[in-house]
Length: 74
Image (cartoon, rainbow, N blue to C red; front, side):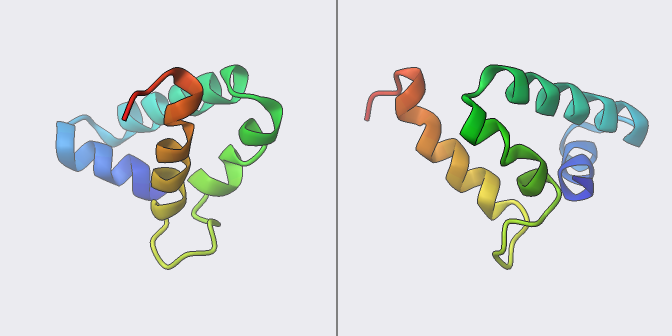
């Protein structure tokens, strides 16, 4: 999750504690709203345990796969 926080700090200029609070809020929201099987993977993905070489790769893959669930049209 630290990588996400650091990216948020770099892109927005937020203080690190505020960025961490924002990430925690978003992660909590996603875990509440996503279907159980997807929500259960959130912790491992934001924890950088996606198994790939890039910690954010798992989140990017998951986000692109979720597009159809929320009515994204290609």
